[in-house]
Image 1 (tube, rainbow, N blue to C red):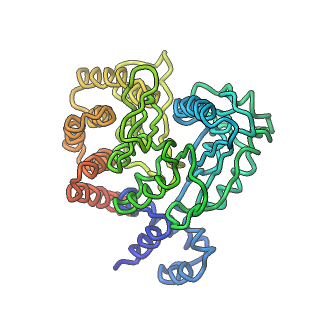
Image 2: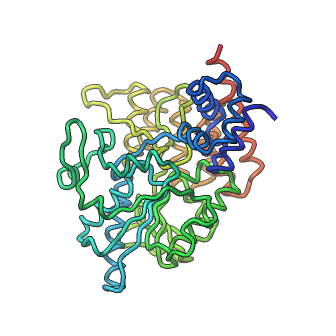
Image 3: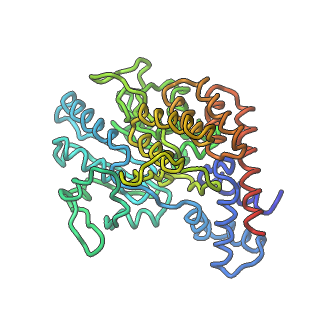
Length: 424
């Protein structure tokens, strides 16, 4: 066993992190950072410190997870929550308040968004309560301060800031009215005693976490999430995690762009046509050196590329790829697909264009078509990390665990190669 393998295994035991999902370079860098902080040059010395100190164990975890989130991410999810909550209250009357869970909640943007969305839907403070959990005490401290910089306000709709925040220098302080609706607690989804004995929740948010687990840990986590969600409740997940819930018998409720699932074995569409949900890229960008994917919590959020100014838009591949990323992350899948085709017609085969077509096909349920596009991507760019990850997830969802494992190992080898080159 290599020195690094011990640290990989430690993080797997503690937080479920699968090294193949992020590449070993992420963990190796975190170990180096902790060694430097402790003035240690030998991994053996650091390992002994790690296994004997709970504070150091938490410090390494904090070095691996990086808060990266913002308010009202996937805005349609919160609109759907408001509609469903109003309907649920009409059904239960005044018998109890709605219970909502957000985990992992990172630095608080998601649970606070939930509270603001419910206020905007007309709910009163006594009608709902939000519990927020995360493995990081540092993130909990930041969340409780409820003081946020401009990076937490992204997207086109930021009018909520005027209603619920007050300026505090270069930052914004969330109102006490919203803060009082959310209770924070340090906890781990993989703890078998998590919230044991407590009543299940009407609505659970757990987004962009499962993709960093191996299949066994995914199953373990999903069993917990099902236990925490009422039989008539709704689970909101990350856009790339729908196939995992489908294998457990949960079904999409049919709310476009909401990534919401129910225990029901029959779909429960809301009024209006059902539109395929878009699974955004973990790190949408033109082809570049393999991106740093921040693991473990929803803070590993996609970085949405801002649209290019109208004056600079043209037919260059980079500009078109930026347009594709923006359109896709806004849920405009048809428009994104059209720009992909425009790029391919104007500039010939492009790995990233095929990747986007694969992703768009994937979320529309066209598995065979998605596989074809992912494989075209890998033919042109054999070490395209995101194509490897998504094709592996697709194969795993279809029961091809051997094929998925091969792709994960291929991605891990690529990460090690890139890391070795950077050290030279």
